[in-house]
Image (cartoon, rainbow, N blue to C red; front, side, top):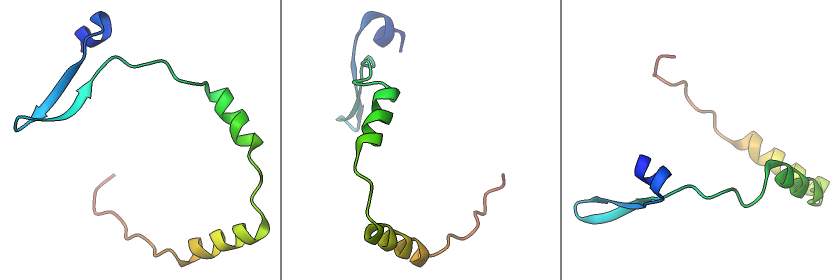
Length: 71
């Protein structure tokens, strides 16, 4: 990880001799969180019919059983 961070190197991770992912230096974000918020605010508001369909679909979703994992 230090070689990636400080030297800018990249590595291909293999499993069974086949590449599965690449580790490379992180790039700066293409835009900021504030720019994303402004973009989302600029989107048109959904109409009432769309909201009704979404609410109907949510109501029809089956409930998920409680997890057996301890918290």
